[in-house]
Image 1 (cartoon, rainbow, N blue to C red):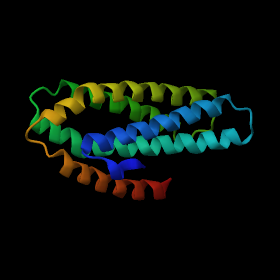
Image 2: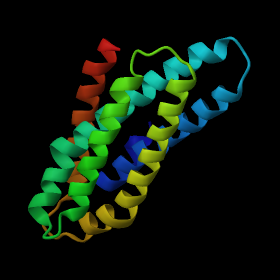
Image 3: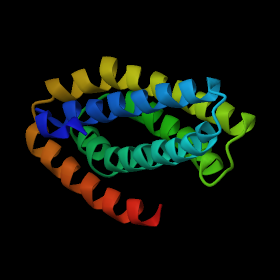
Image 4: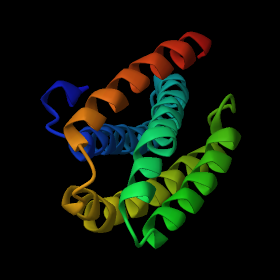
Amino acid sequence: MATRTAKDACDLLDADHRNVKKMFKEYEELTQSRARSAGQRRQELAERICLELTVHTRIEEEIFYPALRDALRDTDALDEAEVEHQSAKELIAQIQGAEPDDRVDAKVKVLGEYVDHHVKEERNEIFPKARSARKLDLVAMRDELEARKEELMAEMGAMA
């Protein structure tokens, strides 16, 4: 992933957003494919999407959002983001380990729509507020997020 070039925490999180968006697009293309191998690839990709989103939400919830709550007065957008995370987690739980079929395809599609909405709100509301908060060192936070992400990927990737 392109996290090495991330300048701050928001850049790192947005790199995750772009990466998972590509995976959702590839998944959608595979749902159109008639090739036998497409079913296996869809299942692998769905699992990878779930892993990436699980790790992403964890680092946001453990590090990014708490720091923003301490630094910002208006935290309504963070409340909304956490509710969106919960909805995504419920879909992820339904997708993980399921056999690829039309219902899983529909769940992956809806998850992608949730993620698109969430990303738009982070880019337009949360990231600008984070960057304007004087109390936040987003460059140091980027390093903390990256380290925690690597740790979680090693843990969860081994379980997948």
